[in-house]
Length: 383
Image 1 (spheres, rainbow, N blue to C red):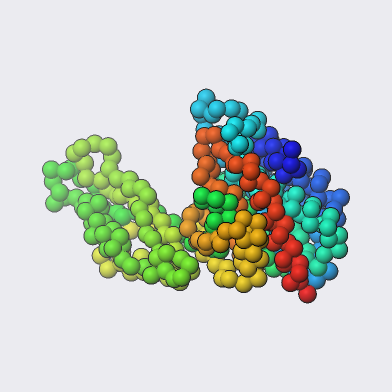
Image 2 (image 1 turned 30 degrees about the vertical axis):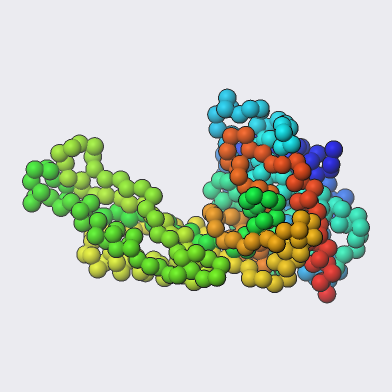
């Protein structure tokens, strides 16, 4: 059995539904510490939702550092009776490794850990520094995980140069896609206020749903930006509308609209907020609007890190990888605040969060090799 597969199975066997880590980070720290890594556990959050974070760092001779980032927590299993096997007992069928977290993202963590071990065995005194940043709060609220570690590193003046987040990014074949950025996420909760009344006497009421519709139509038709070479145009979408008392003869006193922007790097959260308020004000609405910035966009253009990963994928698989910034948010949004070059790369993402989550066993060692090749490439570039 390959060392990558063995470690992946160990991690999958840990019941680490957010915010639990099981013993994943302890297993990893026990392998990293003998290699010269200083391993620090950073716990955060209330007692009933305690998050475990691991920051492990090994300095290099050249002063520059590559961080491998990931999360040991997984989403809930869903109905156990629908799984073909216990989601926390790694199992094999048809050349695939099954278990919760197999694709998202315990295989990546196993692969980059073994890659680091192999790299240091061949290069015991490298120029490149290496670090691992792991959290048990990526699939949850993400308020006590990577963001806390990044804040602490920033306060210390820690300098990070490159980061690979092991999110599952491949689509059809290992290596066919990397994420070199992500869109920002901006959520609004809009409450439009009217006057409740009997539906048969509309002249004595003010229907907030009717009042809101022209503004919502304009918001839906607005071109917020045109995107750029890496990002699609910014998208505004309604996720929920709540109005009415449940009775069929009452005009409601208010309506609540939940909406979200997934925005490109050519827009800002502040600019989008200002434009929304201008539209609502122009329509004369009586409203309250609460905003939540879920994440700022980040983008890593072709350079040292992207080139190193491209070369590693090409050397291992022969594939010319594709860039993408689609999908949801990731912890890259926090790391990018303190690290200028951040990309995401990992195994196939087709089964993530699904019943019978799995990865192809044949992809595990090539994934490990791509991470190791990237280390080797950056080490050669290190001053």
